[in-house]
Image (spheres, rainbow, N blue to C red):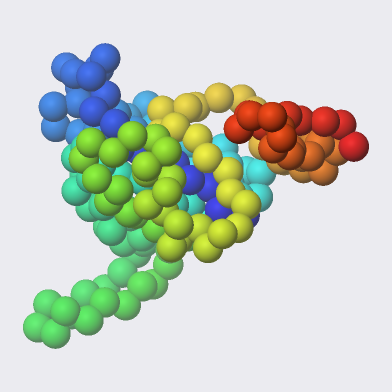
Length: 165
């Protein structure tokens, strides 16, 4: 199951820190908030991420573009540009970084990720949502409650009524 990280907002409440980088890239310790969130999800077995960028997307793109090499020992032949990885300490994550637009709101960002999500179920969180949550238990709970409820249109209006099965 993929995990969507919404990392496109302007971070205006932290404007003194977000002039040069988006809020999810502000460091806690020596790693950005985004890395901490991915570590939490990874510890629960979720390692396929889709980062929805907007404001300062180039900072996020550059970080993950050079991430693997930053955690590796390698040899590079400067005459050819050929690199040989000798050893890597990078986590086993798969990360798609997608620019979803500068002023796009939350729902629009998720909608623009349709190609990357492929119509499958996914997890989503904000790019500053660090917390101590049992993600596996949360997924199990939502699967149980989703299968025990069904939604159907109310015939007298356009509202949805939920009824227990």
